[in-house]
Length: 251
Image (cartoon, rainbow, N blue to C red; front, top):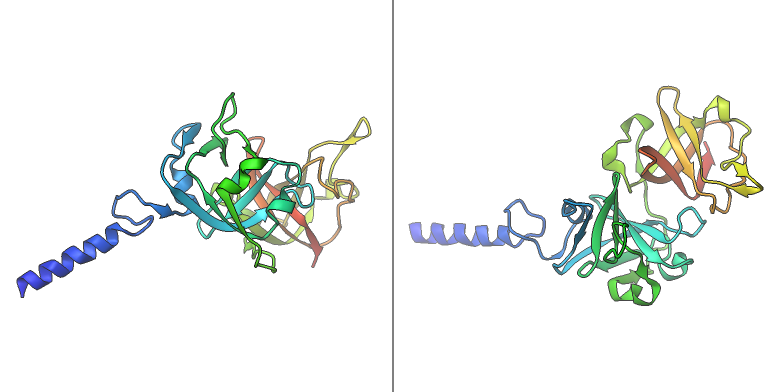
């Protein structure tokens, strides 16, 4: 009887040791969480030599010009920015599509509190952009999802470093009084420039960053209570919300 119990315990331990991202201390293989992948970045840039795969949904890209030559993929644990040498990523990797990314041969890098996945760096960058011609060597795309990804509801006061590259929904906020009547982006020498605005819920305030390449950069800031959906990022040494897919709606 004691031998049977001992054998069962050994089998249980072996099963635990095979679990991806388990707490057994063993090195995972195959599909890993994005949070685990980010945990490997113990330096500015780290080469990924294991056959790791991450899976998730594309929650941000260049569909509305809000990002340029990058997209964000997110799973239940975290999100990460993927750098790509392409001016129309949405045509190759549509917004809200499901993707699997084979990470072997890529690097995971860190700029501030943003984590970037890309090709091995050849200069001072933490990663290079993945060339468009080799993109599908790493990324498999599933176009079956037709509904938008579901953003996580949170308040401004809840936003923290743990939300960087996460898709969030912030409700019952408005742009601060000092910015009413302004456009999302300032104009300098007749060109839009990257700009920061601010939303508040009456207690806390959060920055909203908008790229000059955003298709609606000239939109006048809407008034009243709003629902804003976008990704949290680390921008100029602080947290900020980047609106995605022009998701600023009156409530």
